[in-house]
Amino acid sequence: MYERNHVQELIDLISVNPHMHMIALTGPRQAGKTTIALQACTRFAKSGIPSWYFASDDPGPAQSHPGKWSTHDHIRMGGLSDGQSLVDLWENARKVSLQSDRGLVLFLDEIHMIPNWSRLVKGLWDRDRREGHLIHAVILGSAAWKMLTGTGESLTGRFRTLPVTHWSFPEMAQIFGLTLDEYIFFGGYPGALTEERDPARLQNWHNYVKNAILRPVVDKDITGLERVRKPELMRQLIELAPHYSSQLISYNKLLGQLQDAGNITTIARYLDLLSDAYIMTALSRYTPSPHVGKASPPKLNVLNTAFMTVSSRYTFEGAKADRSFWGRVVESSVGAHLLNTRGSMTEIYFWRNPPYEVDYVISHDRNLVGVEVKSGKTRTRKGLVAFKERFPHAKTLMLGPNDIPLNEFFSFTTDEWLEQL
Image (cartoon, rainbow, N blue to C red; front, side):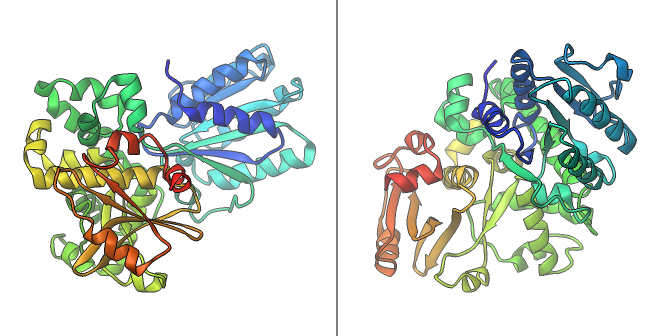
């Protein structure tokens, strides 16, 4: 079974520093977080470290009789029903960790479904630090950490995040044989692969993306974790916004197409929540003064092109035949790659100074790179030339058939491109 790089990263984080903070393994739905946890769980167990995986959405038994918990049971799995079952599980983990010189690894999946979970975990974790219990807690969730913790008890300073991103083109090409165009259209979802390869079952692929990803994002990851006063408005927004990916759009224009929309502040906040749920983001215009850029209409960009193409109702062939639409999908795939692979200190913007514009701007410390995307053979560098004149220290990157090919671009992370230029 294929292992994403996150498996080794997780093992290294725990092995190198056994007394480190908790690890938050967060990322999009259907990106493989549970598989990563189970693969790491197996590898820990083979090396003699007890490793337990429990999920709050697992219907299995929450725990066994305490006397049966021992280091001989290097892997245990089960479910968590409520806060008390979480406390009982942690108490049993403590007993077993005392029998192991390398402690115990405890994976907690979908733990945010348990009310007040962050307060309980904070108390349990702080007691472990006081009493010397060596438990390595790994918390999984399909939302950004700040959304998972919510407004309850703060876990600040007690965790380290390990983000799991959407699957990249090299991964999908290597493991599943996707072509570049297939990846751009269908996105990086291995679970949908069997459906999208058969044109007669395209509807099943649509259903997969909508019912296994988008619907739970709204019903569980957003409205279940955040106070959303108008959940129906959020559902309308998640249907509408992907249509405008790679385009500048004012909040007023979005308001005009939504029923019972409320106000601009509500729309802006809901777009932020969609970003926290790894669906799409609103990019600001790059300016030396950030507050000026935020006052301009944002540029929307999906974080996985599947959200854009599934909402279009195009077939794969139909999407490629519509050159205008296909150009926006290609551009969105570049933006998604930049956003998904950037480091925590790297920002992504767009630049516009009519009549010139640049699709994306990468900013990190004093490094500045303008990125232009061309899906066809025709090309113009006028936007990049104007950008370079405005910011002489900046570097530029032209992507397209006659320049840097997309399959090469997708092979490096955003920060790796910064280092190469």
